[in-house]
Length: 259
Image 1 (spheres, rainbow, N blue to C red):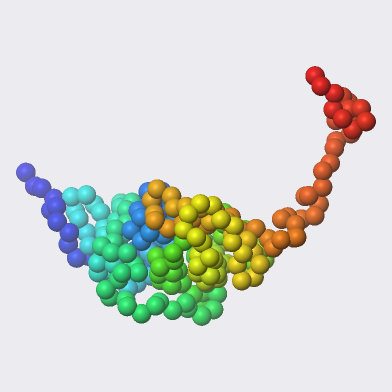
Image 2: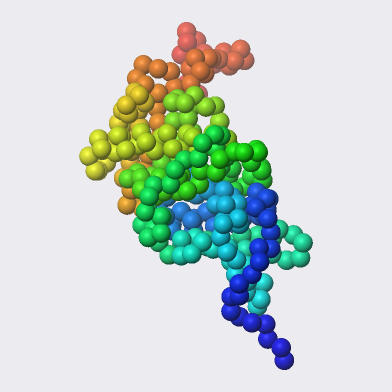
């Protein structure tokens, strides 16, 4: 009886870089990437597709015939496990790394942020990058791994809204907002006393909420960013109380009757 080989063999690339932005990505890849590098899930979810696009061009491939799996790797630094059958792009099902990115023995220098527009889509989005856009995944990964805090995704959205004045985060502004907030996070962390919840003002007047570390990291968490004191949190029209005409029943003199 013929048995398929169970070892990994060198392989040619089964797909081109464009496949990175259309291949299905398993949900479990996000926490695997986050745990390897001690970064937040919100950042990991935006790193996967840019990482894969770059590694398809610069990394190497292995193939295991018994499981019909490919492994896209960059030395000991990064490895994605890729299932592919027939002509479909398949699915990325796992991620591994032998060391956190901030302890990389290969890349000792700080990765540079590429010039121009930056592109980091969420893994659930299948949006190809515009022509000539920069891929900032190395700088973003190293920044997240070295940060002394964990920036939760809602806090980044608040920061983008009140700081750079971005209404919604998307592929074209996620990296810029994250890297800018990360620089400010160093200033904020220096003011944290190491225990309990704290509201700390950054260098621009925004107020950050820090809470103790969660179960998966030793880093304190940034859970929210508030506008400067004296500024409304949202649009003025959202701050006014209103009452529907049909709600007047049951009121007398502005006081609701007990029922």
